Image (cartoon, rainbow, N blue to C red; front, side, top):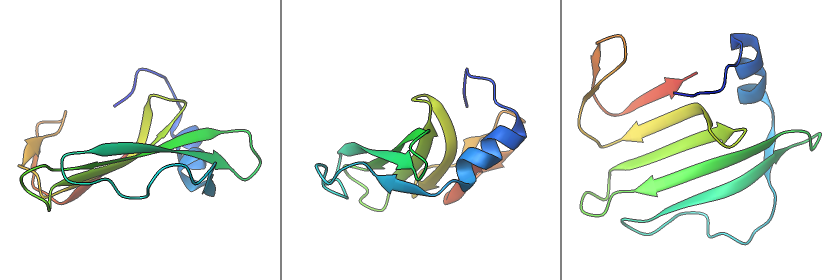
Length: 101
């Protein structure tokens, strides 16, 4: 899921950090067919994160919500209402499902 190498311990620490919104400039939930990225920051102000929210245009139950660190590292992603897809290990998984780094 990422080109940046993190140890599992580092990933777990980033996932477990309390995160808060940097500002209230962005509406919290996008309309059908749209997406937003909400900037987040750790309580100690040392780590920045993005909360990406994407909604389906036709199937309104289809959505992807993910939390990224360091701009490109997807820590956790929740897929709702989409078609089944194959994991890198070859296992086919149905929606809803959670990807966890």
